[in-house]
Image (cartoon, rainbow, N blue to C red; front, side, top):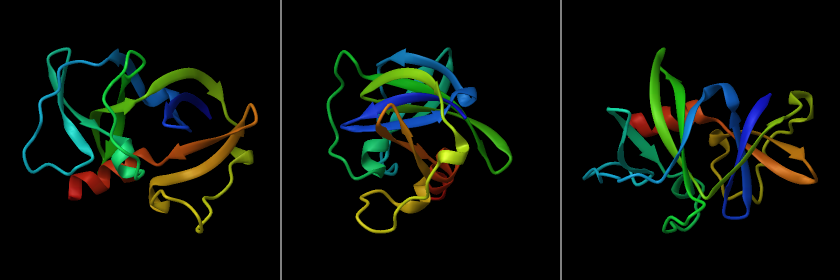
Length: 145
């Protein structure tokens, strides 16, 4: 799998590179009353209203103010057969890498702070664990909230 790697706290996550539309510096964010906590707000991406998701909340991490390294990764997600454009907050975006699907391991059911349904698996890359989130499941859950 060709994947874009990004950092949240001390964790490295990877999302499929083909789903990435663009990477933005932090832009003005409009808060949405009564939205799920993980939906950080809405942003304007080239004239389109795009929901912004904070994976920190989903993965039970403390929310953090943006820094000079914070980026918004704009992705295309399939949701109920339709395309959804969404933004993901990342503490830092690293690089595009190739991850071996055959080396992917299932998520351990014990000792994990992440909801197992939100993780497709864990790979190793450069002696580090890389978490592969299940972006479609995450957004389907948020849409149902």
